[in-house]
Length: 419
Image (cartoon, rainbow, N blue to C red):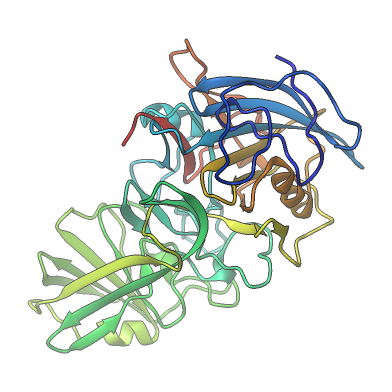
């Protein structure tokens, strides 16, 4: 079905749940697909749209830019529908990668897009990339990981006032939002209390202590002691310490972080510089209690979160967004009432790959109806996977830039009937 052009920037047509007109947050809306028609004052034209399930639509659009036409794909989810929900698409381990279509199918989602930027390359000698994401992850209410220092992040520069701790997520009230997470954690023993600075993350702050558990996987833990708070490329620390705790008792210590799977009854503490000195006080046989949790700045508690760089807040693009570098990009946005989610992925290959700058991406999300939005990983990572009615499996639809799907750290899935 051909669909109309959007009415105009700021008064976007709302496609979520198959809706054809924009309505203010909280207003009643009817289940009808867009009808033909156009207006000359919008640069966005929808070329197709279809209902994947009640409350979920998928469509394609094109935008005329100064560099040529860019084709994009839009998933919308109406979280007012009781059967519609979002959750993290992720491999079996934090430090692991998988293509979006496989994660979508393995977890039973109807559609999904790629998520956060991740550790895909390394410059540190003899240190392999971990494949893990830069930002936090919460899946099905479980805290999987925290955020690396800003300077250790991969991807384009962050807007002023934002950080790797920013996320796109959904609260226990079923409303989506852009939020910021912090880590509350400590290691307690008879010898004192040590503050935790990391959870299953590929980089720790200088002088910090992090905890790794069975969610991490088998990747090397030495990467967490490489780089610095000012440069991802700085050398690995030569002053490190690792403590293995099983069932609350220290079972081994080492001056070098290790690798390999961590049993479910075990936690591994890694420290660098001052953090290494703090852990060095612990010896085999010491009783230790390790506690950690992710805490959101907003309320209520998040049951799902994925790292993302904020680009739109209160309906306005953030100051300092890049206006020069165009690329294939992905984004997640949400309406002001938290009930309508917009997931966007651009086409990955010529002739439909003129791309967007980050500032243009923010304008796009605002035009679609988002009040807040984040920039997700782009380039070869940008993927939208969809399972249409009658199909047995989801497949990638945006012709990714690499010519095939790139394995990524995580994604955002749209689920039907999963509560």
